[in-house]
Structures are given as C-alpha cells and as structure tokens.
Amino acid sequence: MIISDANTATSRVSRPVLPDGLSFNHLVELIERHACIAFGIGFARREALLRMMRSTAVKDWTDPGRDPVCFRAQQDLAAELGITDRALRAHERQLEAIGLLKIDTAADGHRSGVELAGGRRLGLNLAPLIGRIAELMDIDALRRAEGRRFQSLRLECSALKRDLRRRIEEMLETDPKHPALTEALRSYAGWPRRYASFRTIAGLEAHLQEIQRVCDRLSEARACRAESSGVAEAGVPAIQKTILKISVSSGGSSARRLPEARPRTMSGLAENAPAAKSRTGRRAPPPETRCRPAAPETFSADQLYRMASDDMRFCLDIAHRGDGVLTERAFIRAALAILPDLGIHPSAWEEAAETMGNLAAALVVLIVDANRFRAVNPVRKPGAMLRVLTRSAQRGQLNLQGSLTALRRWKLDRDGGPTVVA
Image (cartoon, rainbow, N blue to C red; front, top):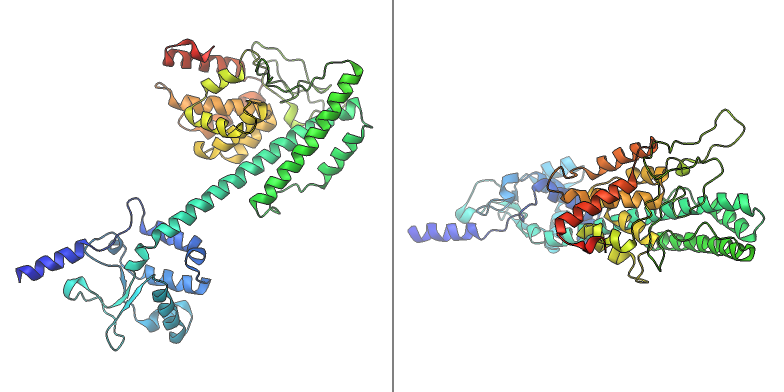
C-alpha cells in the first residue's frame, strides 16, 4: 500500500503544467489568436477546443498532481456549440490526431470527474496541449514583432511625408515652376492618406522607399538651384557629416522659416508663439511649423549618442548601420523604434512631431528615455511626459537646449569623466 501511494505521488508530480508567468486566460487568448495558424485547424474546431478548455477546472492547469480534463457530456458540449454529436466527435478525433488532447473515456464513451487510480479522470485530457504552448508563444512573439515593425514603418512614412510637405511649401515660394516640384506634388497627391491599404511589411517598405526617392529628388533640385544661384541652401542636413553639429530649426530638418513664422530666440522659448493670422488675408502656417523649440547648436551627433540610454544607443546603431554616419534620420528612426518599449502611443509621437518637427521630437524622446534612469525623480511614465513636453512646446515654453544641457551635465557627473562632452 505504501508503494502504491508513492507511485501515485510520483506520477502526479510529473504531470505538465502551464509555464511560469502564463495564466489560463493568457493561454485562451493565444488559442484565440494563433491556434488556426499554429495547429492548422479551422475556426469551428478552434471554438470546440476553447469550449473544452473552459469546461475544465482552471486550477488543474497549474497543479502538477492533476491533468486538465473536460468530462462534460458530449451531447451537452455539442448543444452549446450548436453542432451535432457526430460533428463534435469528428472535432475530438482530429484534435487528438494533431496532439492537442487525449480521448480517455470508458469503453462505452462514459466521462466522469471522479478521480480513479493515479489521479485519472475519464474524459478529454488536455495535458498534451500544454506541450504545444511553445509553438503558440513563438508565433505570438513573431506577430508582435511584425506589429512593431508595421507601427515603426507607418510612423517613419508619416515623418518623411511631413518633411516632404514642408519642402514642397518652401519650393512653392521659391521656384513654383520647377519640374521636380510638379512631380513631387503629383506623387504626394496620389499616395493614400491612411495606411490600412498596406497589408504587408514589404508593401510599407516599398512605400517608404518611394517617399524617400521623391524627397531626394526634391532636395537635389533645391541643391542645384542653390549652386547655380550662388546662394547657400538653407536646407542642409541638420547633422553635418564633417563637424557633426546638431541643428534643430523651426522647420525640422530644414533651416528655412516660412514667411508667416515669427523670429525665434535661443534663450527662453516663451517668445516662440504660433504666428496664426486668422483675421487677415494671409494664410496661417500649418501646424507642423508652429511652436518649434529653438535650435541647440552646441551638441554633436557623437555627444547626443553618448547622452542616450543604452537602449537608445542600440536603436541608433541599427538605424545608421547602413552608412555608418549618425544622421538626422538615424535619430528619428531610433526614436520611432524605441516608442513601443517606452509605452508611448503613436498619437503622442505624431502630436509631438507636428508641434516640434521630427528631429526635435526625436531628441525629446531621447531625453525622456535617458531620464528614466535617474536615481532621483526618474521619468516613470514616458508617454505622459512626452505629452507634457509637447504642451510646453505648443505654449512656446519648451527649452530643448536647456534640457539637453542638463542631460549632458547629469551624464558627465554620473560617469565621472569628460567623455560625454568630448
């Protein structure tokens, strides 16, 4: 008798349970989202599996001494699913064939919750499903990564379109008959305003490349015009490849100001109020040109890289690995890539970018992210902090240069060396 009890205890300990950190409700969500792809089953069979799972005791999924068993009568399950007994039997046999359950009933098909020798109960034993959870989790991780990539591409497309729109507005004032401008306007008008029509990552990447080509052609046309006229072009890259100086101007990547924009100062930013003139005949500037932070012209790209957190540096390394140069676009792409990790909603980024410009918004994200690691008063809610700073920029009160200076000073004090400012 003692030996029998010992064998029973040993068999119970060896029963599979849900992995640590995975609840029954989470497993149900994984089945709902990915079972059709992971196990090759249809919606009807998936619903039958879910009904069987919900007919078990939740605690049995985490009890090493018991298997999760559905011992509901077959006709009752069929009635709840709205199918015939025969259809349900087909579902059960197929689910057993693909290794998601074990049909363990009496010879006459009887099912019972009464515990027999060794903890056995008659019914549909769902313990084999626990061994297939890793497949569900792998697909879930892949889908999440795809979702993040979709979000990053959508935001990057929006950022490029924002820059292109500003360049078009500038060229409409300086050279409205240029062929490159006509082509840019035609392309811009033909692009969809929403991204719902892009069903694949490849489609979005192709759209991003198309936007970039139009931007490049327009930039080349402006550069040629500047060279022929002998006038320095205002839209030089904000991060120079030679001296690597950052320059965030009122127009984002371009240093040109639209005629309606007010002059800005570098001290406090209270003077940077929007220049809307709704009661006059002049057109007010678009939202993306209003209340931009002043330009912090004393920080190199290398300094900004050193001031960033380790996570942001990793994103920057990925963003500029193509040409090895830290450009304005690299900072923007890195900021977009880190948004999900910070829990920042895309709408918060879009509002910040429309208010400050793409590069300034990216630097604000860099600041918010780095300040999460302060020992005193760390940023605990990056999304909320970004919205607060956006509101400050809308009021003309965001001192971006001061924030970067404070971050550089804190990094220098923390690291105990001059490497940050070198």
